[in-house]
Amino acid sequence: MLTWIASFFRPAEPASKPADLEAGFKPKPLQTATVASPTTASRPKAAPAPLPFASRTVNFVYNVFTASRPTYLWTNAKYYFNSGSTYLSGALSGLNARGLSAPASSSRSSEPAPEMVELPLHNPRPTVAASSSQVTKLDTRMRSPTPLPTPPVTPRPTGPYYTITDFIGYSPYKLRVNPYYQPVAAISEQWLDDHHVHPSARKRAGFEACNFGLLTAMCYPDADYERFRVLCDYINCLFAFDDLTDEGGLRKNGDGTKKASDIIMNALTHPFTYETEFRCGQVFSSFWGRAVELGCSPGTQRRFLEYTDLYVQAVHEQVVHRAMNYIPPLEEFIRLRRDTGALKMCFAMGEFGLNVDIPDVVFECPQIKIMEDCANDVVVLSNDIYSYNIEQAQGDTCNIIEASMKEKGFDVQAAMDYAGELVKGRIDLYTTTKAQLPSWGPKVDADVQRYLRVCEDWMTGGFHWSLESKRYFGEQVTTVKKTLCVEILPKEAPRGQIAIPDLDRAS
Image (tube, rainbow, N blue to C red):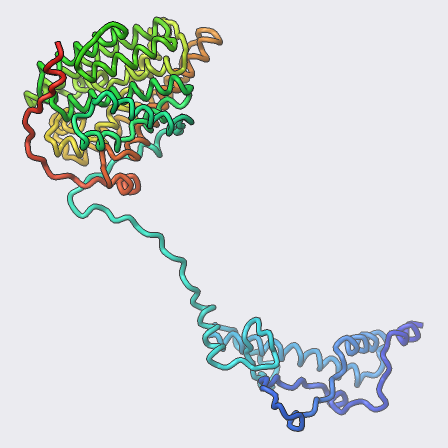
């Protein structure tokens, strides 16, 4: 029965078996393809096609089950064995042709391995043989792929340099930018120029290159349009006055600084009635009067005026120290720096920008005081790191780097590392203290969190702005941001006293 069923699937046998089947089939080695001649007469005759592999397989299975025709069964078994050996030998020859190691040939077959012909990859016309030069070129390209381009490396400074700490990468607080930055910053710069605060066109160009509007946008990202405009004016006024005491005519003039400080305080205390010829006093009176009109809680107004008074007193003390070439001890320096940096004023203006009314009891909380001091130290000490190069070139010693070098005997790099660790420690202390805050009720707690976000924005904004603005690194700011390497500037010639005509005329 099995024989009868299998007969339906068995192909018809030819009248006479081919001789190669009777003697045992041996596949011929492959030959290299050649280009055919245009003349049809020269074309070789096609060889008779061997029995298809599928038909041979059916016959082989049939004979296994029927156990008949042992000669034919043995012939087909030799066919499968020899075919497998042929393809295995061909594969090993291909490996050897490419310079790869391969195991030794099996000793079971004594027949020579057929010649292996290599054809080009993806040849659209397989009837045309690939030249040896083409094959070699393709194989070489496969073995030695083209390397990926190496990204450009920013060179380090060639002269003496120091490295600064990556505060942006260390800080857990992310940068935010006020959406009204660009239009309002331009208006504020024009407003300051209309008051002729800058003594020359060169000073004005240098001031505007600092991009204080960007700093304001990074530090007060939640302020609305009107309040952001006042905040931009405030930051511009603050740095205009700071430049007078740090780089301008008041840098070593204690009496002049005291006179300017008194004018500033009078302008803020009586913004709607006080008049002065000192242009910095005029712009202080202008921005603060608009802040009060927009709405500013009594607590915010009181804190801002108190902190401003501490600021101008500390600036006067710093000017006296500079004139005497005196560098205070580290602890004394840090306490003074918390006031000369004006961050307490900036935090109070953050209350104005948010239009919040936080009770005084919150600012008396020990945790809040610790966090304010930490944020203050982070901003001013990192600022000392960023600004050290231009300050040392100008001979200014009112800097945490100079103070630590004097007290601890550090060189510049060790002082940079020391100051960097101080900043990182303050960031960590701020973060841990924030988790220990008490509660003052849902509404106050929400306002406190918004106020603390101002402190965090000042830390983050200070880092980013210092590495975006040209104030501290000039045209090298992009390189410094990438490498954190600062080439030390040469010392400048000492500058004489610079007159301030509008301050001299002011009463």
